[in-house]
Image (cartoon, rainbow, N blue to C red; front, side, top):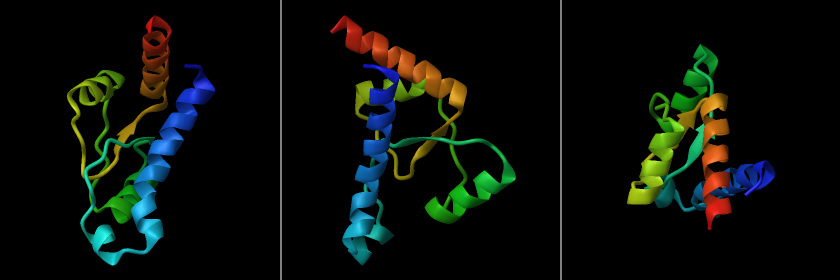
Length: 102
């Protein structure tokens, strides 16, 4: 898996989580379905405020190892998790290594 494929995968996961909102189902929007979406975020006050406004809580930052562990165990979250650019690089590298080994 190359870097562009990994970015496309993350983007697809984010779009998949937006599908219920785009469908216009008010009940779906009020009761978020469990998911495993990870977004690249920074910890600036503006980002924290925007995340809270969009998802109803402060961002929770995860590491690449935590994302891989959640993926392996099937763990899901009610709101997206955040990851720094550095951790995203580690995740892309780990996923690329995993894909190459298959």
